[in-house]
Every structure is written in structure tokens, then in C-alpha cells.
Image (cartoon, rainbow, N blue to C red; front, side):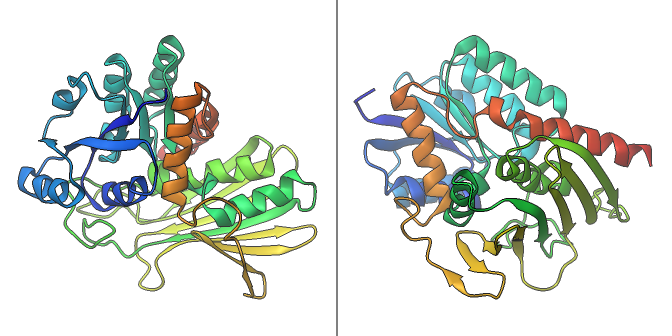
Length: 319
């Protein structure tokens, strides 16, 4: 594909805007349709980014012949169903993490992707952040091996709000959304499948209906371990912080930034063409479409993560 890739983006919230900002820096790509449930807000965002077509219904955008690819930044509960709709319409698709909120949903997507041969990718952004790419390169070069990953995923969300503090129409989930980042990254960086997984959770919130605190332990086949703490109750620094403890070094990753275990900054500006993980993720999606290849974080490559999440959910439900 040499011509401009024409994109429909669904979800004009906090994360959709991050994708729009990233795509601005990518040559040969144009967002031509914006889909979101609040038409006035959608028109406002579309006007800011020069997007001509606006709708509240994904089907309207999928009916546009000129749309080559779709990026889904919609509520978790819609991901699998909407990804299937995009593939059925013959569109390449990148769905934000998580791929699905059930094992069956993930299986359905993978089956249809195999059938269509279209590019279907999931936004496992940690694979693309320059900080984690730096560590990955060290591992691939044989200079560093993970002994333990210690990860904290902390938010303060006792009400239903998004990353910008705006009211949200759907409920977020520590296991299927936020733990998915770390479960996938741990197996990817350890370069070894997860063979043991354990989870416990705190009380269920009376109105949100979800656990607000969770603890997960993982072990890879090669012996590496991971401890993940997640909370929506944390009134402090927000986000996800990774400590890689290895045989030759300790690294602390905070989104696109990286530090030594002693908090000395590490220059990751030369790791990739951008310092923005979301933009790098989008670049990989469009490159895979152009080159007719499977992308890093294709739905098939991240499927093992959802098998582990399913196993953890069963364990939590049993208790």
C-alpha cells in the first residue's frame, strides 16, 4: 500500500485524543472519520483535528469504502464486539487494551483475524514505550535477564472518571484492563511463558461493583517472577511504575522514561523515532498494514495474556 492510509477512530475521549496527537506525526496517514457517543463533543474534537466525517455509530464509519483501518478507543466492554465488526467489514483494526473482557471474546477475534488475514493489533503500549524497548533490547542482546519485576498500578478513582477526571459512561477494571499491561509485558520481556499465576482482591465497591485493590503474582517458565499491586484507592502519584530487577542491573520505568535503580536518568531518546509510546504503537500498526505483515502485539501474539487473565478471574470468583 503506497497511498495514504485512511483511518476511522472510535472514541474521542482521553485516549482517542492521544492517538490523534500521535498520528499527526506519521506521514501517509489521515484520520477521516471520528466516532463517539456525544455528538457535540465529537464535532468539537473533529474540528480541532480537521476530521471531515463525524458520527455516533461505528457502522456509519465502517460503511465508508475509503476507510482502510480503524482504531478503537472505546469502553472495554465493547472491544471484542467492535473488533469483530471491523474485521467483518474488511478493515484493518487496532483495538486499545484490553482485546476483550473475556477469554471467549479474545478467542472469537483471533479466529476471525485468521480467517480474514487482516492486520488486527491490540494496544499493549508497554511493548512500545522507549523505556521498555530499551530494556527489551538489553535482554535481546544477552546483557540483562529479569530475576523479578515489581509493578505498581495506582489510580485514585473512587468515582467513575477517566484519565482527565471527566465522568465516564462505563466502569474500568483492574484485572481485564490494567493488569493486562503487566501480564503481557512480563511474558514478553522474560521471553518465557507464564506458568504460575495467583491473585487476591480487596472488597467490592458498593456502587461501582468492582474490586478497588488487587495483588497478582506471576512466574515464568524460565524462573523469573513478577509481583503486581493494583489500586483505584491510591491518593498519591498516579500511573504504573515498573522495577526490573535483573542479573546485571536494576531499571525503573515510568511510561516513556527510564532510570537506574538509584534513580539516575537513562537517555532513551535514540531507542526509536519518537519518545511517545502511543505514537510508536500507531507507527507499528500502519507499518504492518503497508508491509503486509503481522505486527508486534498482534491479537495472536497477546492472546496468552488473556488466557492468564481468565485463569486469574476464575481463581478470584472461586474465592
